[in-house]
Length: 353
Image (cartoon, rainbow, N blue to C red; front, side, top):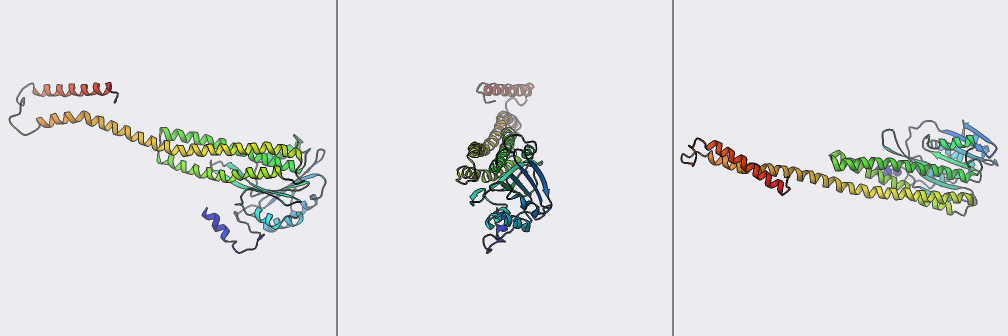
C-alpha cells in the first residue's frame, strides 16, 4: 500500500494525460502480435514495428492486436495516436495499479481488469489487462506475455466456436470470459489451501499457522479488490448503449455477469471462513493448554497424599507411631498403592480421566 502511494508521488503536479509508466522497468522487449480474421479468412502476424499494425484499423475484417509489455511509452503513444485513443486512456493503460473500470468513448470502448493466477511458488500474482474495443478491432495490452489466452488463439487458428463468425465485441467477451474462468481456478486453489490450513489449525496449530492465516487474509483482500469492481465493468459493458456492442453479445455478457457474482460470493464465503479460522486456532490452543493443565493437575493430585505420607514419616522425631515396627514400611507402601488405585478408580468413574 505504501509503495503504491510512493509510485504516484512521482507524478504529482503533472497535467492529466501525462504518460508515465509506474510498473517494473526491467521488462523484455515489447511484442506486438496481430490476428486478422473473419469466417473465411485468417491471418496471424508478429509485428516488428508498431507502424505495421496501422493498416488493420480500417479493414472490414475483425482484428485483434495484442501488445505484450507496456513499458515503452513512445510505442504506446504512436499506437494511441493512430487509433485515436484519448490521452487519459493511455495514461490508465500505463498505470498498472488502475482499478477495473468500463468507459465508453463513442468510437471505442475501454475496459481494464486484472489477470490473476498462482505462480509455481504457490504465490498469487496479478497483472493488469486493458482492452480497447472498436468497430472492427480489439487492442489488448498486457504487462507481460502470458499463456492465459492461448486457447483463444488456437480457436482463431482452427475456426472452432463462434469467435471467427462474430465481431470484435464478441472477441472482447471471450477474453473477459477466459479471465473469469481463471478466477474460478484461483478460487479453487484458494479453497484447497484453506482446507489444508483449517486442518492444521484444528490438529496441529503453530505460529506458522497464524502467519499463514494472515497471509491468506491479505491475498483475499487483493482478490476482492481485483474482482469486486469487475461486476460493475461487465454490467456497464452489457447495458451500454454503444453501437459497438451487438445484442447477441449482450446475451453472453449476462451469463458472464452471473459467473462474476458467483466468484465474488465464493470470496465472501472464504473471507468468513478465514475469520473463523482464527477462532479455531485460538480455541485449539486453549484446549491444548487445558488438556496439559488437566494432566498436570491429575499427576499432582496423585502425588500429594503420597508426598504427605512420606514427608510425615521422614520427620526427625524419635516417637512416631509404627516407626520401629518391622512391617511398617511394607504396610505404608501397600497403603499408598491402595490409596492411589482408589483415587484412579474414583476419577475414572467421574470420567475425569
